Image (cartoon, rainbow, N blue to C red):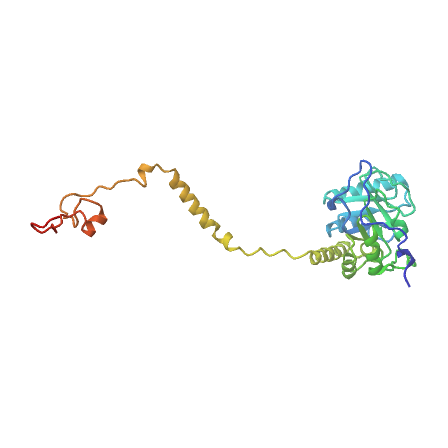
Length: 308
């Protein structure tokens, strides 16, 4: 039975229209790879330590949740996490419309609409109806891909085929979210077209969050390498290309000869010794005349006394 969330209610196309002063982001400015969602209640260590370990393992994007905290405590937590990420060139995204003095938020599917005009805006989506509401958001998460311990009973899960169907209909880049804990699941998300995977429990619950992050990040990098086309072989040189250096050298030599003064090249005269040599042919007349005998004195053919 087809999942009703995948029904093509709206023709979304593949590109969103750009409106207003916002510009489209480059791939380096969008979440990709392994994106960590925080949850201090399930973490085995203090949240700052877990995030620092994940960054050491290759994570460069973190979504701060912890929505139950007062704003002041949450803002202080955001300051600390930004400091950890900035040392590695990473980015903190805040869940909810309040960026906590930053410039990046991740919004729920329920709103607000339209999204705030910030440097980076993401949105949680689960079906084509929610994807149809995307306007100026920069990316989406698609979930749940697999059953998840964080939200048990939430679903049904998309699984890789359902994820691929939603990625195909998303007008912006998509992250796979929900129940992703193994390298095989990371690879499956990328094969489905996601630009990265968002994980929570796989790192937050890990005894060694750095090793967990490293394992998932390596899986993402390996899947990315496999997805890239092989480098094109250099085309074989044609005969013309192979001889180009030779013809260039010949042309240069010809050019040099053309600019050399005539008196020093073609019309250069060589002194010929005039003593000790015996000419083999008379010096009068042309060489052709000398060889044929023309020009030499010839015996008279007239007979004495005959009338001419």
